[in-house]
Image 1 (cartoon, rainbow over the protein chains, first blue to last red):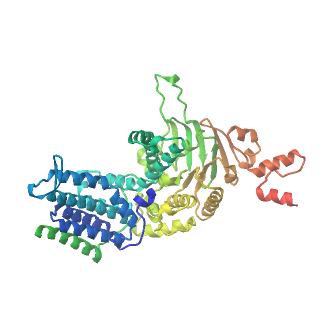
Image 2 (cartoon, each protein chain N blue to C red):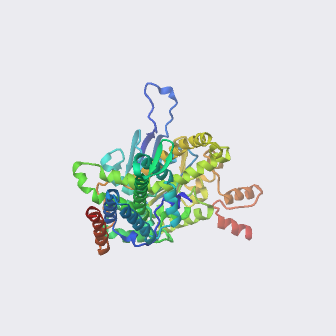
Image 3 (cartoon, chains in turn brown, blue):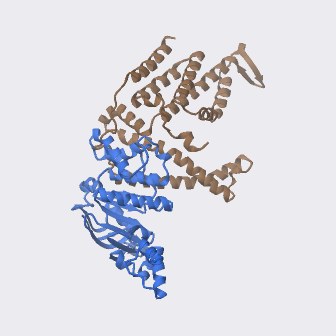
Length: 263
Length: 278
Protein backbone atom coordinates (compact mmCIF):
# COMPACT_ATOMS: atom_id res chain seq x y z
CA UNK A 1 0.00 0.00 0.00
CA UNK A 2 1.52 3.28 -1.02
CA UNK A 3 1.95 6.05 1.45
CA UNK A 4 -0.18 8.22 -0.77
CA UNK A 5 -3.28 6.03 -0.59
CA UNK A 6 -2.76 5.32 3.09
CA UNK A 7 -2.55 8.85 4.37
CA UNK A 8 -3.61 11.39 1.81
CA UNK A 9 -6.98 13.06 1.57
CA UNK A 10 -8.37 12.18 -1.81
CA UNK A 11 -11.42 13.71 -3.31
CA UNK A 12 -14.24 11.19 -3.69
CA UNK A 13 -17.26 13.49 -3.85
CA UNK A 14 -18.87 11.73 -0.94
CA UNK A 15 -21.64 13.10 1.26
CA UNK A 16 -19.24 13.39 4.21
CA UNK A 17 -16.85 15.53 2.19
CA UNK A 18 -19.53 18.13 1.65
CA UNK A 19 -20.14 18.65 5.36
CA UNK A 20 -18.92 21.96 6.75
CA UNK A 21 -15.43 21.43 8.23
CA UNK A 22 -16.36 23.31 11.42
CA UNK A 23 -19.31 21.03 11.97
CA UNK A 24 -17.20 17.99 11.21
CA UNK A 25 -14.68 18.99 13.88
CA UNK A 26 -17.45 19.62 16.42
CA UNK A 27 -19.11 16.32 15.53
CA UNK A 28 -15.80 14.49 15.98
CA UNK A 29 -15.38 16.07 19.44
CA UNK A 30 -18.93 15.16 20.49
CA UNK A 31 -18.76 11.66 19.07
CA UNK A 32 -15.32 11.13 20.59
CA UNK A 33 -16.60 12.27 24.00
CA UNK A 34 -19.54 9.85 23.73
CA UNK A 35 -17.18 7.04 22.79
CA UNK A 36 -14.95 7.71 25.78
CA UNK A 37 -17.76 8.28 28.29
CA UNK A 38 -19.94 5.28 27.59
CA UNK A 39 -19.44 2.26 29.84
CA UNK A 40 -21.81 -0.02 28.02
CA UNK A 41 -20.21 -2.64 25.73
CA UNK A 42 -23.31 -2.67 23.52
CA UNK A 43 -23.24 1.11 23.03
CA UNK A 44 -19.50 1.13 22.34
CA UNK A 45 -19.97 -1.60 19.74
CA UNK A 46 -22.92 0.28 18.21
CA UNK A 47 -20.84 3.45 17.95
CA UNK A 48 -17.98 1.57 16.34
CA UNK A 49 -20.43 0.09 13.82
CA UNK A 50 -21.77 3.59 13.03
CA UNK A 51 -18.21 4.72 12.31
CA UNK A 52 -17.62 1.72 10.06
CA UNK A 53 -20.88 2.52 8.24
CA UNK A 54 -19.74 6.14 7.84
CA UNK A 55 -16.50 4.80 6.37
CA UNK A 56 -18.60 3.18 3.65
CA UNK A 57 -20.69 6.32 3.15
CA UNK A 58 -17.45 8.29 2.74
CA UNK A 59 -16.51 5.93 -0.12
CA UNK A 60 -13.19 5.18 1.57
CA UNK A 61 -11.24 2.03 0.79
CA UNK A 62 -12.12 -0.99 2.95
CA UNK A 63 -8.55 -2.17 2.46
CA UNK A 64 -7.35 0.98 4.19
CA UNK A 65 -9.81 0.35 7.05
CA UNK A 66 -8.48 -3.18 7.55
CA UNK A 67 -4.91 -1.92 7.31
CA UNK A 68 -5.66 0.82 9.87
CA UNK A 69 -7.16 -1.67 12.33
CA UNK A 70 -4.41 -4.23 11.77
CA UNK A 71 -1.77 -1.59 12.44
CA UNK A 72 -3.32 -1.23 15.90
CA UNK A 73 -3.11 -4.94 16.69
CA UNK A 74 -0.16 -4.47 19.03
CA UNK A 75 -2.17 -1.93 21.03
CA UNK A 76 -5.18 -4.24 21.05
CA UNK A 77 -3.12 -7.19 22.27
CA UNK A 78 -1.35 -5.25 25.03
CA UNK A 79 -4.66 -3.64 26.12
CA UNK A 80 -6.39 -7.02 26.31
CA UNK A 81 -3.59 -8.56 28.36
CA UNK A 82 -3.36 -5.56 30.66
CA UNK A 83 -7.13 -5.39 31.26
CA UNK A 84 -7.49 -9.13 31.70
CA UNK A 85 -4.75 -9.14 34.32
CA UNK A 86 -5.88 -5.94 36.01
CA UNK A 87 -9.56 -6.70 36.33
CA UNK A 88 -9.82 -9.87 38.33
CA UNK A 89 -12.93 -11.36 39.71
CA UNK A 90 -12.76 -14.57 41.72
CA UNK A 91 -15.95 -16.07 40.34
CA UNK A 92 -15.38 -15.35 36.68
CA UNK A 93 -11.93 -16.71 35.95
CA UNK A 94 -11.87 -18.11 32.44
CA UNK A 95 -8.21 -19.10 32.09
CA UNK A 96 -5.60 -19.66 34.75
CA UNK A 97 -1.99 -19.64 33.63
CA UNK A 98 0.38 -20.01 36.56
CA UNK A 99 -0.16 -17.08 38.90
CA UNK A 100 -2.16 -15.22 36.18
CA UNK A 101 -5.95 -15.31 36.06
CA UNK A 102 -7.89 -14.10 33.04
CA UNK A 103 -11.39 -13.12 34.12
CA UNK A 104 -14.54 -12.52 32.07
CA UNK A 105 -15.03 -8.91 33.33
CA UNK A 106 -11.41 -8.22 32.44
CA UNK A 107 -11.88 -9.57 28.93
CA UNK A 108 -15.03 -7.44 28.44
CA UNK A 109 -13.22 -4.38 29.73
CA UNK A 110 -10.32 -5.15 27.38
CA UNK A 111 -12.66 -5.47 24.40
CA UNK A 112 -14.29 -2.15 25.34
CA UNK A 113 -10.90 -0.47 25.53
CA UNK A 114 -9.95 -1.90 22.14
CA UNK A 115 -13.23 -0.65 20.68
CA UNK A 116 -12.50 2.74 22.20
CA UNK A 117 -9.02 2.90 20.64
CA UNK A 118 -10.33 1.70 17.26
CA UNK A 119 -13.23 4.18 17.47
CA UNK A 120 -11.03 7.18 18.18
CA UNK A 121 -8.60 6.23 15.40
CA UNK A 122 -11.45 5.70 12.91
CA UNK A 123 -13.08 8.95 13.96
CA UNK A 124 -9.92 10.99 13.38
CA UNK A 125 -9.16 9.04 10.25
CA UNK A 126 -12.62 9.84 8.86
CA UNK A 127 -12.10 13.52 9.63
CA UNK A 128 -8.68 13.71 7.97
CA UNK A 129 -9.59 11.56 4.97
CA UNK A 130 -12.79 13.37 4.12
CA UNK A 131 -11.59 16.93 4.67
CA UNK A 132 -8.95 18.73 2.66
CA UNK A 133 -6.15 19.96 4.96
CA UNK A 134 -6.80 23.57 3.92
CA UNK A 135 -10.48 23.28 4.84
CA UNK A 136 -9.58 21.50 8.04
CA UNK A 137 -7.13 24.24 8.92
CA UNK A 138 -9.65 26.98 8.12
CA UNK A 139 -12.35 25.21 10.12
CA UNK A 140 -10.04 24.78 13.10
CA UNK A 141 -8.92 28.38 12.87
CA UNK A 142 -12.49 29.68 12.87
CA UNK A 143 -13.39 27.49 15.87
CA UNK A 144 -10.27 28.53 17.79
CA UNK A 145 -10.63 32.21 16.87
CA UNK A 146 -11.62 33.26 20.43
CA UNK A 147 -8.18 32.13 21.63
CA UNK A 148 -6.56 34.85 19.53
CA UNK A 149 -7.78 37.35 22.11
CA UNK A 150 -5.17 35.89 24.47
CA UNK A 151 -2.56 36.29 21.70
CA UNK A 152 -2.25 32.57 21.20
CA UNK A 153 -0.72 31.79 17.76
CA UNK A 154 -3.81 29.97 16.51
CA UNK A 155 -3.22 30.63 12.81
CA UNK A 156 0.41 29.54 12.94
CA UNK A 157 -0.42 26.35 14.85
CA UNK A 158 -3.20 25.46 12.43
CA UNK A 159 -1.01 26.17 9.40
CA UNK A 160 1.72 23.90 10.81
CA UNK A 161 -0.87 21.20 11.37
CA UNK A 162 -2.23 21.42 7.82
CA UNK A 163 1.25 21.41 6.27
CA UNK A 164 2.24 18.42 8.39
CA UNK A 165 -0.80 16.58 7.01
CA UNK A 166 0.08 17.62 3.46
CA UNK A 167 3.67 16.41 3.82
CA UNK A 168 3.08 13.10 5.62
CA UNK A 169 2.55 11.10 2.42
CA UNK A 170 5.52 12.80 0.77
CA UNK A 171 7.70 11.88 3.73
CA UNK A 172 6.47 8.30 3.58
CA UNK A 173 7.40 8.15 -0.09
CA UNK A 174 10.83 9.57 0.69
CA UNK A 175 11.24 7.00 3.48
CA UNK A 176 10.44 4.27 0.98
CA UNK A 177 12.96 5.67 -1.51
CA UNK A 178 15.71 5.81 1.13
CA UNK A 179 14.82 2.28 2.25
CA UNK A 180 15.09 0.94 -1.30
CA UNK A 181 18.32 2.85 -1.93
CA UNK A 182 19.83 1.37 1.23
CA UNK A 183 18.50 -2.09 0.41
CA UNK A 184 20.27 -1.86 -2.95
CA UNK A 185 23.48 -1.15 -1.03
CA UNK A 186 22.99 -4.02 1.41
CA UNK A 187 21.00 -2.30 4.16
CA UNK A 188 20.37 -4.63 7.09
CA UNK A 189 16.68 -4.17 7.88
CA UNK A 190 15.52 -7.07 5.70
CA UNK A 191 17.69 -9.54 7.58
CA UNK A 192 16.37 -11.89 10.19
CA UNK A 193 16.41 -10.87 13.82
CA UNK A 194 14.96 -7.84 15.52
CA UNK A 195 18.37 -6.39 16.43
CA UNK A 196 19.73 -6.39 12.88
CA UNK A 197 16.44 -5.04 11.52
CA UNK A 198 16.42 -2.27 14.10
CA UNK A 199 20.06 -1.37 13.48
CA UNK A 200 19.23 -1.35 9.76
CA UNK A 201 16.45 1.19 10.26
CA UNK A 202 18.64 3.65 12.16
CA UNK A 203 20.76 4.72 9.14
CA UNK A 204 17.51 5.64 7.34
CA UNK A 205 16.39 8.06 10.00
CA UNK A 206 19.19 10.59 9.57
CA UNK A 207 18.74 11.09 5.78
CA UNK A 208 14.98 11.28 6.31
CA UNK A 209 15.42 13.86 9.04
CA UNK A 210 17.81 15.95 6.92
CA UNK A 211 15.51 15.66 3.91
CA UNK A 212 12.51 16.75 5.98
CA UNK A 213 14.36 19.82 7.20
CA UNK A 214 15.43 20.74 3.67
CA UNK A 215 11.91 20.30 2.31
CA UNK A 216 10.48 22.35 5.15
CA UNK A 217 13.02 25.08 4.41
CA UNK A 218 12.16 25.09 0.69
CA UNK A 219 8.45 25.22 1.45
CA UNK A 220 8.93 28.06 3.92
CA UNK A 221 10.83 30.05 1.28
CA UNK A 222 8.14 29.33 -1.34
CA UNK A 223 5.37 30.36 1.07
CA UNK A 224 7.19 33.52 2.05
CA UNK A 225 7.83 34.44 -1.57
CA UNK A 226 4.09 34.05 -2.21
CA UNK A 227 3.49 36.85 0.28
CA UNK A 228 2.68 34.66 3.30
CA UNK A 229 3.10 36.63 6.52
CA UNK A 230 0.87 34.84 8.98
CA UNK A 231 -2.81 35.69 9.15
CA UNK A 232 -2.16 39.43 8.81
CA UNK A 233 -4.33 40.81 6.01
CA UNK A 234 -5.39 37.36 4.76
CA UNK A 235 -8.76 36.77 3.21
CA UNK A 236 -10.35 33.41 3.93
CA UNK A 237 -10.48 31.31 0.76
CA UNK A 238 -14.11 30.29 1.25
CA UNK A 239 -17.26 31.64 2.78
CA UNK A 240 -18.61 29.04 5.17
CA UNK A 241 -22.34 28.67 5.66
CA UNK A 242 -24.04 25.95 7.65
CA UNK A 243 -26.56 23.92 5.68
CA UNK A 244 -29.38 21.70 6.84
CA UNK A 245 -27.19 18.59 6.65
CA UNK A 246 -24.60 20.27 8.91
CA UNK A 247 -27.25 21.01 11.55
CA UNK A 248 -28.46 17.42 11.24
CA UNK A 249 -24.93 16.09 11.82
CA UNK A 250 -24.50 18.32 14.87
CA UNK A 251 -27.90 17.34 16.28
CA UNK A 252 -27.16 13.65 15.81
CA UNK A 253 -23.73 13.95 17.50
CA UNK A 254 -25.19 15.92 20.40
CA UNK A 255 -28.11 13.51 20.77
CA UNK A 256 -25.67 10.62 20.76
CA UNK A 257 -23.70 12.20 23.61
CA UNK A 258 -26.84 12.98 25.63
CA UNK A 259 -28.10 9.44 25.09
CA UNK A 260 -24.91 8.13 26.71
CA UNK A 261 -25.69 10.13 29.86
CA UNK A 262 -29.32 9.00 29.92
CA UNK A 263 -28.50 5.30 29.29
CA UNK B 1 12.11 48.25 -12.36
CA UNK B 2 15.01 46.44 -10.67
CA UNK B 3 18.16 48.24 -9.67
CA UNK B 4 20.95 46.30 -7.97
CA UNK B 5 23.75 48.49 -6.72
CA UNK B 6 27.06 46.94 -5.74
CA UNK B 7 25.39 44.05 -3.92
CA UNK B 8 27.50 41.57 -1.98
CA UNK B 9 25.91 38.64 -0.24
CA UNK B 10 27.19 35.96 2.13
CA UNK B 11 25.00 33.05 3.23
CA UNK B 12 27.06 32.94 6.42
CA UNK B 13 28.54 36.27 7.30
CA UNK B 14 32.34 36.09 7.72
CA UNK B 15 33.74 36.40 11.19
CA UNK B 16 35.65 39.69 11.39
CA UNK B 17 38.25 38.20 13.73
CA UNK B 18 38.83 35.24 11.48
CA UNK B 19 39.16 36.68 8.01
CA UNK B 20 41.15 33.73 6.72
CA UNK B 21 38.35 31.29 7.43
CA UNK B 22 37.79 30.89 3.72
CA UNK B 23 34.29 32.40 3.51
CA UNK B 24 33.44 33.26 -0.04
CA UNK B 25 30.58 35.54 -0.91
CA UNK B 26 27.72 34.04 -2.91
CA UNK B 27 27.61 37.39 -4.71
CA UNK B 28 30.36 39.91 -4.94
CA UNK B 29 29.83 43.57 -5.89
CA UNK B 30 27.03 42.87 -8.38
CA UNK B 31 25.37 45.79 -10.14
CA UNK B 32 22.54 45.32 -12.59
CA UNK B 33 19.60 47.27 -13.91
CA UNK B 34 16.56 45.55 -15.38
CA UNK B 35 13.79 47.70 -16.90
CA UNK B 36 10.15 46.59 -16.89
CA UNK B 37 9.22 44.12 -19.61
CA UNK B 38 12.74 42.88 -20.34
CA UNK B 39 13.46 39.17 -20.77
CA UNK B 40 16.77 38.52 -19.04
CA UNK B 41 18.53 35.16 -18.74
CA UNK B 42 20.85 34.50 -15.79
CA UNK B 43 23.40 31.92 -16.89
CA UNK B 44 26.31 30.20 -15.22
CA UNK B 45 27.50 27.11 -13.38
CA UNK B 46 25.90 25.79 -10.21
CA UNK B 47 26.95 27.98 -7.30
CA UNK B 48 27.84 30.92 -9.54
CA UNK B 49 25.35 33.22 -7.79
CA UNK B 50 22.33 33.22 -10.15
CA UNK B 51 19.82 31.83 -7.64
CA UNK B 52 21.28 33.87 -4.81
CA UNK B 53 20.65 37.03 -6.79
CA UNK B 54 17.07 35.96 -7.52
CA UNK B 55 16.50 35.51 -3.79
CA UNK B 56 17.76 39.02 -3.16
CA UNK B 57 15.23 40.37 -5.65
CA UNK B 58 12.29 38.87 -3.76
CA UNK B 59 13.62 39.88 -0.35
CA UNK B 60 13.99 36.28 0.79
CA UNK B 61 17.65 37.10 1.43
CA UNK B 62 19.05 40.54 2.10
CA UNK B 63 22.33 41.86 0.69
CA UNK B 64 25.24 41.94 3.14
CA UNK B 65 26.47 45.08 1.38
CA UNK B 66 24.96 47.31 -1.30
CA UNK B 67 21.31 47.82 -2.12
CA UNK B 68 18.61 46.10 -4.10
CA UNK B 69 15.76 48.30 -5.27
CA UNK B 70 12.55 46.86 -6.69
CA UNK B 71 10.29 49.51 -8.15
CA UNK B 72 11.97 52.01 -5.87
CA UNK B 73 11.50 49.88 -2.72
CA UNK B 74 14.64 48.90 -0.84
CA UNK B 75 14.53 45.18 0.02
CA UNK B 76 16.42 45.88 3.26
CA UNK B 77 13.46 47.85 4.61
CA UNK B 78 11.10 45.44 6.28
CA UNK B 79 8.06 47.60 5.64
CA UNK B 80 8.69 47.34 1.87
CA UNK B 81 8.73 43.53 1.78
CA UNK B 82 4.99 42.96 1.13
CA UNK B 83 5.08 45.30 -1.90
CA UNK B 84 8.34 43.75 -3.15
CA UNK B 85 7.07 40.19 -2.81
CA UNK B 86 3.88 41.10 -4.59
CA UNK B 87 5.90 42.62 -7.43
CA UNK B 88 8.47 39.83 -7.77
CA UNK B 89 7.38 36.22 -7.83
CA UNK B 90 9.55 33.11 -8.16
CA UNK B 91 8.88 29.68 -9.61
CA UNK B 92 11.35 27.28 -8.04
CA UNK B 93 13.04 24.14 -9.32
CA UNK B 94 11.02 21.48 -7.49
CA UNK B 95 7.26 21.95 -7.89
CA UNK B 96 6.51 19.61 -4.97
CA UNK B 97 8.30 21.89 -2.52
CA UNK B 98 6.32 24.99 -3.44
CA UNK B 99 2.77 23.67 -3.40
CA UNK B 100 0.78 24.31 -0.28
CA UNK B 101 -2.72 23.29 -1.36
CA UNK B 102 -4.07 19.81 -1.86
CA UNK B 103 -6.09 20.76 -4.92
CA UNK B 104 -5.22 22.99 -7.87
CA UNK B 105 -7.68 25.66 -6.71
CA UNK B 106 -6.43 25.68 -3.12
CA UNK B 107 -2.85 26.09 -4.25
CA UNK B 108 -3.61 29.07 -6.48
CA UNK B 109 -5.84 30.56 -3.78
CA UNK B 110 -3.03 30.44 -1.19
CA UNK B 111 -1.16 33.43 -2.61
CA UNK B 112 -4.36 35.33 -3.39
CA UNK B 113 -5.51 34.87 0.17
CA UNK B 114 -2.13 36.09 1.48
CA UNK B 115 -2.36 39.38 -0.41
CA UNK B 116 -5.93 39.97 0.70
CA UNK B 117 -7.53 39.47 -2.71
CA UNK B 118 -11.30 40.16 -2.46
CA UNK B 119 -12.93 36.91 -1.44
CA UNK B 120 -15.72 37.07 -4.02
CA UNK B 121 -13.13 37.37 -6.82
CA UNK B 122 -10.84 34.51 -5.76
CA UNK B 123 -12.77 31.81 -7.66
CA UNK B 124 -12.77 33.78 -10.94
CA UNK B 125 -9.07 34.57 -10.55
CA UNK B 126 -8.28 30.87 -10.04
CA UNK B 127 -10.19 30.02 -13.24
CA UNK B 128 -8.36 32.82 -15.08
CA UNK B 129 -4.92 31.57 -13.96
CA UNK B 130 -5.72 27.96 -14.89
CA UNK B 131 -6.83 29.05 -18.34
CA UNK B 132 -3.86 31.39 -18.77
CA UNK B 133 -1.27 28.63 -18.41
CA UNK B 134 -3.39 26.10 -20.29
CA UNK B 135 -3.54 23.69 -17.38
CA UNK B 136 -5.88 20.90 -18.35
CA UNK B 137 -7.27 20.46 -14.88
CA UNK B 138 -10.19 21.86 -12.97
CA UNK B 139 -9.63 23.56 -9.66
CA UNK B 140 -10.83 20.55 -7.69
CA UNK B 141 -8.19 18.23 -9.15
CA UNK B 142 -5.72 16.99 -6.51
CA UNK B 143 -2.18 18.26 -6.99
CA UNK B 144 -0.87 14.74 -6.39
CA UNK B 145 -2.59 13.59 -9.61
CA UNK B 146 -0.73 16.07 -11.82
CA UNK B 147 2.31 15.16 -13.89
CA UNK B 148 5.64 16.93 -13.31
CA UNK B 149 4.99 19.34 -16.19
CA UNK B 150 1.48 20.07 -14.96
CA UNK B 151 2.74 20.69 -11.43
CA UNK B 152 5.19 23.25 -12.75
CA UNK B 153 2.41 24.86 -14.82
CA UNK B 154 0.38 25.01 -11.61
CA UNK B 155 3.30 26.72 -9.87
CA UNK B 156 3.34 29.20 -12.75
CA UNK B 157 -0.42 29.74 -12.50
CA UNK B 158 -0.15 30.24 -8.73
CA UNK B 159 2.34 33.07 -9.09
CA UNK B 160 0.75 34.65 -12.17
CA UNK B 161 -2.55 34.89 -10.32
CA UNK B 162 -0.84 37.46 -8.10
CA UNK B 163 -0.22 39.69 -11.15
CA UNK B 164 3.53 40.06 -10.57
CA UNK B 165 5.48 42.80 -12.31
CA UNK B 166 8.52 40.52 -12.45
CA UNK B 167 8.64 36.74 -12.70
CA UNK B 168 11.76 34.76 -11.87
CA UNK B 169 12.05 31.17 -13.06
CA UNK B 170 14.77 29.55 -10.99
CA UNK B 171 15.73 26.48 -13.05
CA UNK B 172 12.01 25.80 -13.24
CA UNK B 173 12.40 23.32 -16.09
CA UNK B 174 15.31 21.32 -14.73
CA UNK B 175 13.13 18.55 -13.27
CA UNK B 176 10.98 18.18 -16.38
CA UNK B 177 11.42 15.78 -19.27
CA UNK B 178 12.29 17.34 -22.67
CA UNK B 179 8.68 17.38 -23.93
CA UNK B 180 7.31 18.89 -20.72
CA UNK B 181 10.15 21.41 -20.74
CA UNK B 182 9.36 22.51 -24.28
CA UNK B 183 5.65 22.79 -23.47
CA UNK B 184 6.40 24.80 -20.34
CA UNK B 185 8.60 27.26 -22.25
CA UNK B 186 5.98 27.60 -25.01
CA UNK B 187 3.29 28.25 -22.41
CA UNK B 188 5.44 30.88 -20.78
CA UNK B 189 5.94 32.77 -24.03
CA UNK B 190 2.22 32.54 -24.83
CA UNK B 191 1.45 33.98 -21.40
CA UNK B 192 3.90 36.84 -21.92
CA UNK B 193 2.03 37.84 -25.05
CA UNK B 194 -1.14 38.26 -22.98
CA UNK B 195 0.27 39.59 -19.71
CA UNK B 196 3.35 41.80 -19.78
CA UNK B 197 5.95 41.33 -17.05
CA UNK B 198 9.70 41.31 -16.61
CA UNK B 199 11.05 37.80 -17.00
CA UNK B 200 14.24 36.60 -15.33
CA UNK B 201 15.03 33.12 -16.52
CA UNK B 202 17.68 31.12 -14.69
CA UNK B 203 18.82 28.05 -16.59
CA UNK B 204 21.66 25.94 -17.93
CA UNK B 205 19.83 25.29 -21.20
CA UNK B 206 20.70 28.03 -23.68
CA UNK B 207 18.12 26.87 -26.22
CA UNK B 208 15.41 28.02 -23.78
CA UNK B 209 16.69 31.58 -23.73
CA UNK B 210 17.75 32.25 -27.32
CA UNK B 211 14.83 34.70 -27.51
CA UNK B 212 15.95 36.67 -24.46
CA UNK B 213 16.69 40.38 -24.69
CA UNK B 214 19.83 39.97 -22.62
CA UNK B 215 22.05 37.24 -21.22
CA UNK B 216 23.85 37.84 -17.94
CA UNK B 217 26.75 35.46 -17.31
CA UNK B 218 27.79 34.64 -13.74
CA UNK B 219 30.98 33.11 -12.43
CA UNK B 220 32.02 32.75 -8.76
CA UNK B 221 29.44 35.25 -7.58
CA UNK B 222 30.30 37.92 -10.13
CA UNK B 223 28.75 39.08 -13.36
CA UNK B 224 31.47 38.48 -15.94
CA UNK B 225 29.57 39.42 -19.08
CA UNK B 226 26.22 40.65 -20.27
CA UNK B 227 24.81 41.37 -23.67
CA UNK B 228 22.45 40.18 -26.35
CA UNK B 229 22.38 36.45 -27.15
CA UNK B 230 23.57 37.23 -30.70
CA UNK B 231 26.69 38.86 -29.28
CA UNK B 232 27.50 36.42 -26.48
CA UNK B 233 26.90 33.19 -28.38
CA UNK B 234 29.83 34.09 -30.63
CA UNK B 235 32.17 33.79 -27.65
CA UNK B 236 32.18 30.03 -27.15
CA UNK B 237 35.25 30.17 -24.88
CA UNK B 238 33.44 32.51 -22.50
CA UNK B 239 30.36 30.30 -22.51
CA UNK B 240 32.43 27.20 -21.85
CA UNK B 241 34.11 28.99 -18.96
CA UNK B 242 30.65 29.51 -17.53
CA UNK B 243 29.80 25.82 -17.93
CA UNK B 244 27.42 26.49 -20.79
CA UNK B 245 26.96 24.71 -24.08
CA UNK B 246 25.44 26.26 -27.16
CA UNK B 247 22.38 24.56 -28.67
CA UNK B 248 23.19 21.79 -31.19
CA UNK B 249 22.26 23.92 -34.19
CA UNK B 250 24.83 26.55 -33.17
CA UNK B 251 27.50 23.90 -32.79
CA UNK B 252 26.54 22.38 -36.13
CA UNK B 253 26.66 25.81 -37.78
CA UNK B 254 30.16 26.30 -36.35
CA UNK B 255 31.30 22.95 -37.77
CA UNK B 256 29.85 23.86 -41.17
CA UNK B 257 31.72 27.14 -41.14
CA UNK B 258 34.93 25.26 -40.36
CA UNK B 259 34.29 23.22 -43.52
CA UNK B 260 34.10 26.47 -45.50
CA UNK B 261 30.32 26.48 -45.83
CA UNK B 262 28.79 29.92 -45.51
CA UNK B 263 26.34 30.00 -42.61
CA UNK B 264 24.73 33.27 -41.48
CA UNK B 265 25.54 34.50 -37.97
CA UNK B 266 21.95 34.82 -36.71
CA UNK B 267 21.31 31.11 -36.90
CA UNK B 268 18.38 29.29 -35.36
CA UNK B 269 16.97 25.79 -35.73
CA UNK B 270 14.54 26.70 -38.51
CA UNK B 271 17.08 28.70 -40.52
CA UNK B 272 19.69 25.95 -40.32
CA UNK B 273 17.16 23.33 -41.43
CA UNK B 274 16.16 25.52 -44.37
CA UNK B 275 19.81 26.06 -45.27
CA UNK B 276 20.61 22.35 -45.17
CA UNK B 277 17.50 21.38 -47.13
CA UNK B 278 18.17 23.85 -49.93
